[in-house]
Image (cartoon, rainbow, N blue to C red; front, top):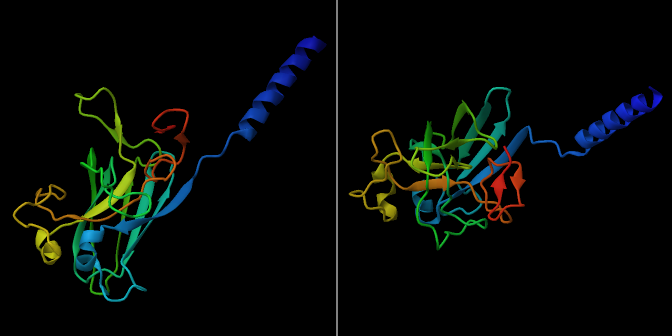
Length: 212
């Protein structure tokens, strides 16, 4: 009995040590969105002042049943409206430059509207599955598709017309499917290539995947 008890104790200690040694998952994250360079002047409240660029700060808190995302934007032209999505692919590289190999945003989920008031600031909150597990599938793909990026689009195509956007060719990124171009979006991690909503990357795969 003593030998059995010792074995159980050692096993319990080993399990506890393993659990302690495992990295803790992130319960709250924060990241910034970057402006789409082509449409920066149509977005910025102070386009001639590089010290006050448009900004979008995102925080996500993990919950028991779902997660809560809060976004705060500042220094944006007053009274603009946007539509926020979680998407599969970012149009930008990790350094904020446009990705020359970008083709499309992949799977996209419409999450919320985002309105900027007279002060040039705005905020929105969503509550859904976000960190590490956000995905969708349409039954025609071999498996689920994650949407680890966050971005928002000009709701009105005319708001980006002076920056060269062709208003006769709207994008589908609003409820009427007649939106303007991408305004701001998250950047991929320089090492994994994944969006910031993945907090537990698995680098044993190529390309890296997310551990749900």
